Length: 366
View (cartoon, rainbow, N blue to C red):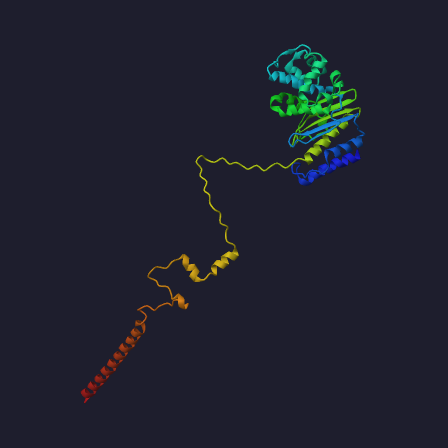
């Protein structure tokens, strides 16, 4: 068992590294290799063990000893109840119809058979169809096996094989909308035992278990992110093998689950919304901005045309235009000069006046 536990731990380690089971990198080991090691650890063989696996998403299928007929115990109630639910769907039987052999209504018989695995009620449903051979013939509608593949013991005793159970589970899963009550009863049945003892509680298990004279079996749907169907038949090896086989297949399934495809979010928009197609222009980087700033003036001027009355410099001589003086520039020195001349005249007139006044005063004193 130590070797098998190590393999199972290795598979789960791959899941823990990725953070979630859905994103885990698939293990390189095939289910065939994993089951082979599991059987080696438990001492299992083709006489005491059979297993069938089917991934409902990827279609991966695996079977070991899957056509070998073994004691079915109460797993025979899976195809039996399927058949009666089909009779109800076709209108041949009413759910409230009283089944004499079962001693109750058909609706209650389903509950008793699937949830509590009531043998008396289930056998009553079986013989309500006719003799044992008739019942077994009618069950074949759910199986894909050909006549030559089916051992004679199937028709004379409570023997089935795991491939038959996987076929019945496939029919149930593919038409689950029509069998919601049946699946609900299987989800309710026997919590914490058989497959439910090995599968983590976060994943639902809809199963039909069976235990009879050393035969310990379980068949069902395990609702991992990629739901898978599983059927395990054993003989004289104990219930722990069934639980551990379910745990092993669950670990394998999770390790090979593909990440979900990204879903584009759809946003509801008001009616009449118009979408404009605008070409996105990337923003210039620092180098582009610096290059644009260093462009010559004559390139920049092309985007800003000058008025017609302003002439351009003679481009043939490579000269640039010089600022021109306005007509007001000449009067500034002339005005200064005029002021100076006026001041000189005023001074001269003052001097002459003082001289005349001096002569007049000198003549009056004499």
